[in-house]
Image (cartoon, rainbow, N blue to C red; front, side, top):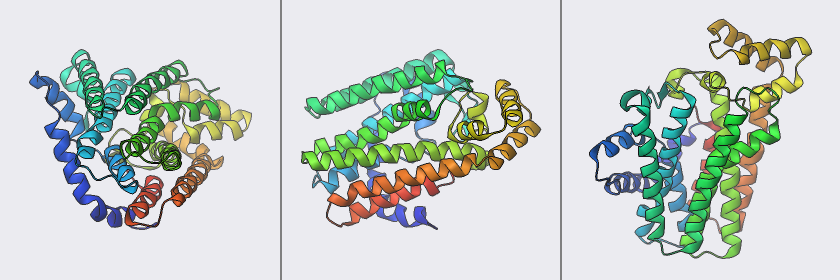
Length: 326
């Protein structure tokens, strides 16, 4: 697993350069402030995973038309919109190593900028002249909204189950990654078998990415993470490492964890206690084991495709999703 990112980046460098240029070229609001707010987050170091997955999914199905690069921007615009909205809802402080957009520009205009990005994504999707693609993209916005609502309802709820958690991350994170792979296949007019395989790949990859993010909230430092360590817990989000530890803990230790979780202003010492309890009850190891299973499932889904550099890149992306530090 060592050096996956270093091996992967040269293989996708040209695609990433084209995607970066397309994101800039197609962000064309009439109000300059909208571009400034969107760019505050969008051009602050995102990995461009979702647009890259569209390009690769279309390519593995034989599609190389230049339109794919413009089309791929849809998913970065959607992703950025969800992050802008999330940061307002969660009262977040930092994103990608800098103050959140709403702290700089204010919540109302940040929310409206997120709305603009959603609309821009739908408009570009319509340029595909594909009803199936438009259905996938519009359906994703429904899923993301519902996932956010479920998470909000369950905020700070220590009875939040693993099944409920998986449902939320499938809707909030997984749906964009799954949709990127699926629409790449649709754009390429792939066979049903190919489209289904890429959809399965994307579904599993999305789960890996979110579980890995949730692990990083307890194992990375602020510089690596790009946001405050422990932010998820302060925002009342119970993720897989905590859910497992709560489930496996003794009544006394569960009570200690619940007390810390209930207080969004927990101290550094209290967070250290929680980390020790996560270790005691194997929360992080359990989450990593579950994510590893999804990595393997993602790679199995690619086996219907002939061996190629593109298939190798997609498989490497599954490994990278779990091994990354930020």
